Length: 110
Image (cartoon, rainbow, N blue to C red; front, side, top):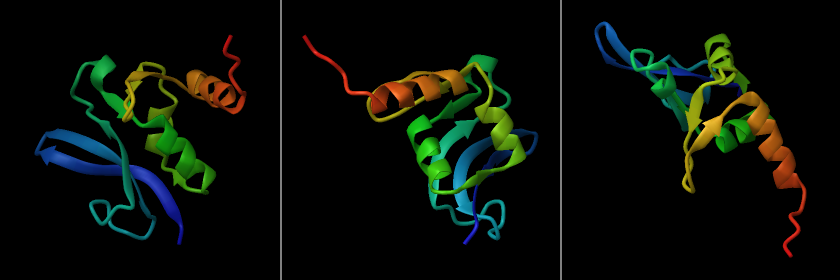
């Protein structure tokens, strides 16, 4: 099964918003999803347009999921917010790699 990270459309006519989802590449655009990993709301202000769970994205990419061209562009954007069960923070490609590197290194508490 080929897994893709892509957009699933919601909203009304001329007022779309999208969920960033992981699904089988053969499934229809609005078909059954494996997991929802974020939101994209193109009508909102630039700061509020994109929210992504970076940990889930990294997990699915490690499993071999391929992002669509649009999702790849969205994930490479600088001003995007992330959300997780713990807390919300700013997401960028640089901060995601830095946080992944820092998570791999043990912390030293004095």
